[in-house]
Length: 273
Image 1 (tube, helix red, strand yellow):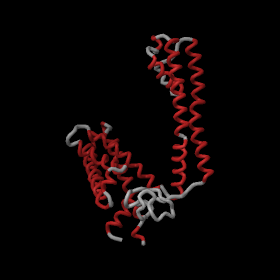
Image 2 (image 1 turned 135 degrees about the vertical axis):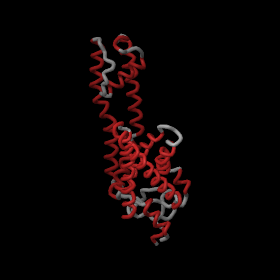
Image 3 (image 1 turned 60 degrees about the vertical axis):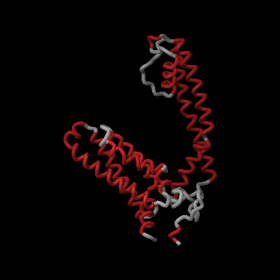
């Protein structure tokens, strides 16, 4: 293997020992960066250690910048990485500190780096876990139509209840308009109950009680739909996948015995021959 390919395995692969260590160190730096931002937002800490936090933030930014450039250099198709999901996240994680030199307060945007913690799935995405995650994704996709119909029905319910409460209750109770009454219906139906609006009449309180009880049943419906689909996926069996990354299209999650990428037909791990 060439030096470039060895670096590629370290940076992009998660199943190799060196690749896993690289991702773990990267996640540690990302976590440290988030902690730095959180501490800097505390006035007392910022007043005492603001200069140290500022220097540390720049060191982390330089590390992320170097890593981002390295990924562009070693990947076969740089533009594909740059416009990929992780590529955009990696770029956004480096920009805020530089933007803070031009725009005051832009440094607070470094919290975007929290999205880079999604890379933790690459570390723990061992073959035995990939199948289960794929089953959950498939169950959610198969449940999409049923959940959309369910949400439409809930929308109709809150509109009807909100309109009724607007007619029943007085503006002094907080039901000053139909949209505001619908807001109350949503808050009550989801059992959140902020308490900023409350019915005062006997009929309104009876309706509110019915909506509260109805809310418990409604919450269970989407859970049951997804659970049912997950049971179907479990019955079909779990297909184990690897975390190999295609050199051409950067796609992950191939079958454990796959030799070629299922998306672009490129050979997987050509340097292992």
